[in-house]
Length: 162
Image (cartoon, rainbow, N blue to C red; front, top):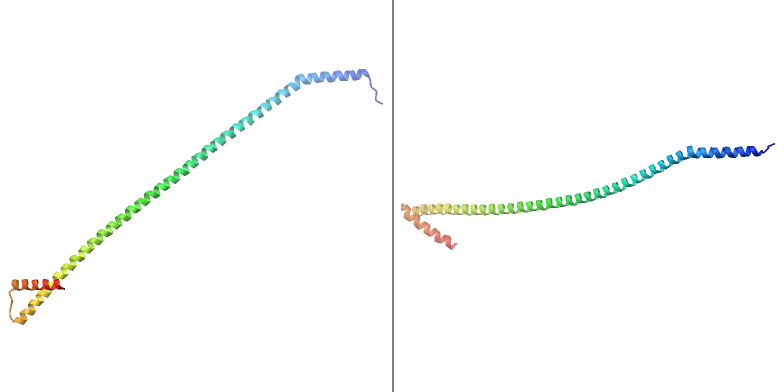
């Protein structure tokens, strides 16, 4: 059976109290100090992580702002390039139209000149044929300068009437 002695109980209580004070003085103080250091370290790590997170958010916002500005700048550059290309195109078209008008004018002048030359040639041929025909009819040779002047006057009159 179990026997309870007062002296054993008293020694057990004293042993427990001595053990508690010794543990409190040597072990709990150090353990609490280590736990407080760890808590402080965790708090500082959390604060550092939050600070890094805020900095990352600020950098992200700054990057997005720069990216938006870059997109606007790129759109502006593209619009300017399109405007310049349109002006160059319009300039080239105006230049081509001016060249076409100039070439058309030159061609019309050349055609008129060739037509006049052909008409003069045809008049000369007709005059020569008329002189030959008149010489055959008159059975004589005509004076070249007087007869040509007469034929030219005659052809001018006929040409005006036609």
